[in-house]
Image 1: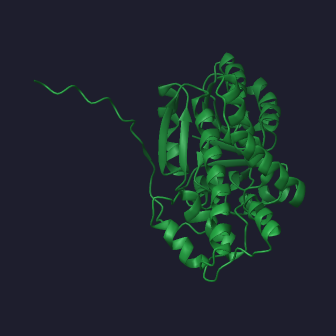
Image 2: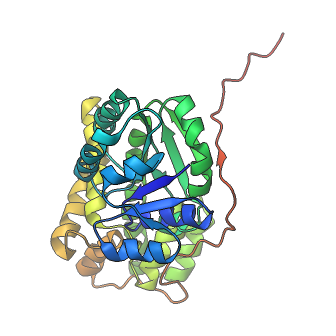
Image 3: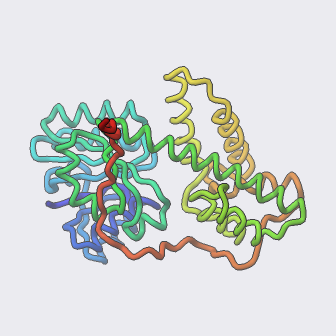
Length: 321
């Protein structure tokens, strides 16, 4: 199938690169012409406008920075959508928006699937990122050959909208872990502990997490460049808070987390790298949360392999008497 990819930013560019690397016929579009030119130099084709891409492609993938950006692109695509066309939304977006836009796409006779990703830009770059796939089972199965070259672990989450809800939940948890790690590292530094030793103590303990094993390294090296900015964090944790409010769940950590990240934006800039949130504690204490031996950038050293679907756990049958 001919695939079009719209949005070649930090995540989208790496996902599109996986398709190109695995031999897919790929057209690309981005507002930044230099990003398009780079893909053309590597064997991709310029896609023209979103509407033009729908006319010539079987599948259109979008990976965009905001719900508003996705809405604008889908509005351009809709007049050309119809039977035989599939839209895959890989942005992290509002579940209500994916339902609204998905319904508009489906009304043309086309298919809509949502496939947000999780695992960091370094894993998006190697095809080893995880994918949440939301939509009718038949639609997810139809695009599975593409998904298996975009990511490693693929989970069908249910109907349209479920994947977006789970994605903002995981980004909320990742942000909780990030802020908690900043507090833990700074407290250990104040207590006189070596931070390289502290890193290993967390890594081998019950206190470890994916965020620690990746982002703590960038904090300690001083790089603090995780390819994910505070405005994107604020979008995602805001969407999670919205879900909680809609469900009348009285969260306590979430509002505090939003306040912390908003303060980070005021101090360091709206689009500051999210790992710079450690600098709030460095500023408050006069301590430097740094250690030798940590990398300036994350590199995924897992070999690339074809993705596979994760099977949900099933209820265990009652034991026979």
